Image 1 (tube, rainbow, N blue to C red):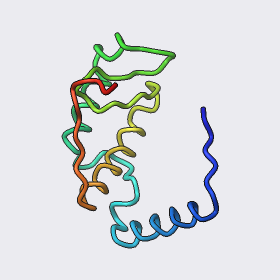
Image 2 (image 1 turned 90 degrees about the vertical axis):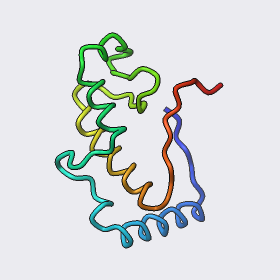
Image 3 (image 1 turned 180 degrees about the vertical axis):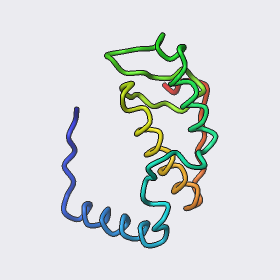
Image 4 (image 1 turned 120 degrees about the horizontal axis):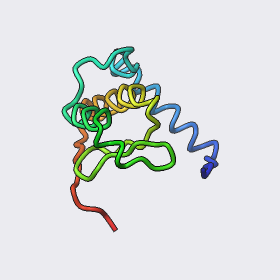
Length: 108
């Protein structure tokens, strides 16, 4: 795993941006304990990762989805946690005006 070293200036900018997001969206910035009102991309990923089809794609003990589904490479024991975190991230992105698109083709 590659470790990135950020300059003090970059860390400061990130800290300011994090505080800004938490103050704008206090409720949404905290991952929930349950997967409440999940995004359709999360529902597709959850259904696939918890199905028997996902285990055909096991690699290094991690489950990863096929093309056209949100790519989450996660161990079987952490699927729920990854889905909750990713759902919170997607909701925050959409609230801030960003669009998320899942492409079926591979990028080179």
